[in-house]
Amino acid sequence: MKKKVFFGFLLTTVISAYCFAQPVEDKAQLEKERKELQKELSEIQGLYDKVKGQTKQTLGQLSVLNRKINLQEKYISSINKEIRSIDDDIYLSNLEIYRLQKQMDTLKAQYAKTVVYAYTNRSSYDYLNFIFSANSFNDAIRRVAYLKSYREYRQKQVANIIETQQMISQRKQQQVGRKEQKNVALENQTKQVDELAKQKKEKDAVVSKLKTQEKDLQKQIAAKKKRDRDLQNSINVIVRREIEAAKKEAAKRAADEAKKNAGTNPSTNTNPTTVVNPTSRIKATTEKPTVIFNSDADIKLNAGFETNRGRLPWPVDNGYLKIRFGKYEIEGTKLVGDNPGITIGTQAGNTVKSVFDGEVVAIFNMGDGMAVTVRHGRYFTTYSNLTGVSISKGANVKTGQALGRAGKDDEGSSGQIDFILMIETKNVNPEPWLRR
Image (cartoon, rainbow, N blue to C red; front, side):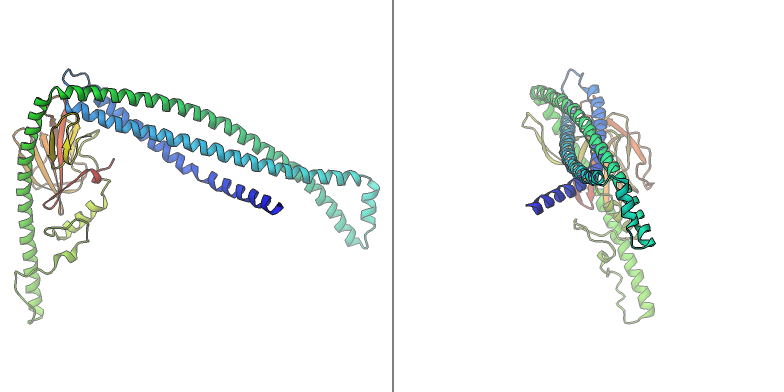
């Protein structure tokens, strides 16, 4: 039975010691996450304040509300994590107080024994008798040292008891503080849940009004489909042109290599049209290429672009996702579309920037705005619906360099750009590549 009690006490001590070492990093991460969410919520609220006063409901309003609701749900989730963390702290603190109280009981029991022993042997005669009954001088010295160490041991026991009492008091004080923090977090949770309910009601009202504007929306979607087709056709021509140029360059390099080999080894095949496995010069990726851009500069750009997946900056500051990549449906209606990239909402006139180093391979007019295509090795990014393009074809651009400014959206109430990412001839979803 005593063994079970001992091992139970030991296990409690180990678990509490381990768990108390854990939350520091988690708390810092939670705090960082919450601050980022608060910042995003503040930014998206600013955008919404600019569009919610319009008499006519727009897709922009719906997109901002959806983003706002998504952020609000994440913020509430963050508060819930904080509450769980506080509950864990309180539970672990209770375990620590229990352990310290057990330790206090043990220290008091040990000290009580020494007090009883000192009381029963309190006569000065007993101490002198203990010393002078030694067999030798050295033995007497050892006995004096023993009595001195025994006195120090008792003093240390008292110090340990006082220290343990202080630790218990500190833990209990921390408990009070953590419970107060939990009450504040619960109040905030209630406030944010009410705010979420309010936002969902606003969204329902916007969706309801959009239903009555379905004919206008249908015209907008039809215009977007046509614009997307024209944009995609233009990009396809540009990409094919770049691929043909890359093939010619690869063939030229292969021919030069063959001539060089022929000069040192007559038996080497000198056919200039033979290309020696260019895939050996570039690392494998999950996307199967149609042709390899395998110059040294391309290889470097490919590697850099792939390494930065999920960390590429957004083309505009404070942008929000208005229409996702691929097939989409307008809430509350039967209207559907198929987006070749993503449509990003922003303020008209905001600076549009390159998401990575590359070469501007095309600048073209889409009728209602300009488009810029940048090649990053075998990756292509296109930024459409720009005004005031600030670079020229053939220019080498750096990450974050200005390309132009965002034009107005279809409703004319705000701004937007279309951002398209292609791996050679294949359109891919840009969202997983962008930092969020």
